[in-house]
Image (cartoon, rainbow, N blue to C red; front, side, top):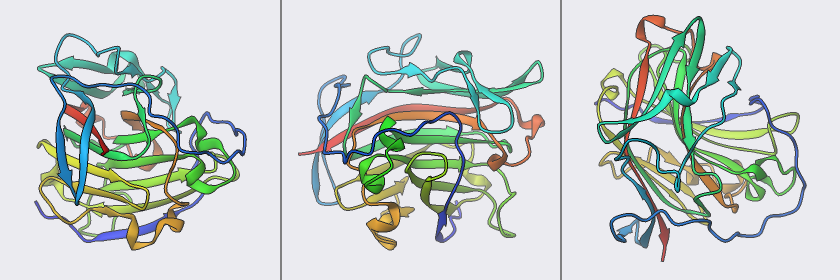
Length: 288
C-alpha cells in the first residue's frame, strides 16, 4: 500500500449539530469509569511505557455487550439529512458491522459508544477494522466527553479526540492524493467559539476492503497514532506542539465507533451503497 506524506493543517469553525455550551471550570484529572476486561488481563510495552489492559471486546455473540456499549442515539447527523439508526449497527461473524445505506430515500448509518460504561483519561487505544469505499460518508474511531463544550482552558478542559476518520472521496484532494485518514481535536464547543486542529494522512484505494490495525497513544504530553506495523506515526502532535492542539486533553473520555454522511464526505455515491465498516476488536490500556 502506497502511503503519502503526513500533512498537518489547522481547521477552525467546523459546525457539528446538537451541542450546547457548559460551565467554564478547569477540569482536573478524573477517575476512570468502568472496567471492560474479558479473558484475563494483558500487559505490554509500547514506546518505552508499560501498559495494562483496561478494556477489551471482540464482538462475539448475537448482540452488543450492554455492559460495554450502547448504540448512538437515533438522530439526524451533519448537513445532508442522514440519520443514525439502531438497525445500522449489529454483530455478525464475530465482528461489529456499521452499515451505511439509503432506505426509502433517506440516508442511514450508525455507531456505538461506551458513554457511562467505560471512560478513561489517557492510555493506549487499539482497534482492528476494515472499511468499504463509498463517497459521501466517513468512518471514525474517536473519544468524546460532554466537557468538550467548556469554554476555558482549551482542549485540556474538554476535547473531542478523533483518532481517525476515513474519508473515502477525492473531493478535497490534490491530483494523485486520493483519500485520507483525518485525525483531529475539537474544543470550546461547536458553535461561535469552536476551535480545532487536524492532520491528514493520504492513502490510496488499496487501503479499502483490507484489515488494518491502529494504535493510538494519548499521554500527558502528546498524541501519536500508528497504522498497521509502521513505527512512524501517521498522527504526531509533537510536530506542532501541544498548544496548537489546545493543550493535551485531561478529561475522562468515552469511545465512539461510527459512520455518517455529510458534505465533508463529498457527493454520495449510491452505487457504492450499502457500505460497511467491520470491527474485529477494540482494546484499551492504561499506563502502569
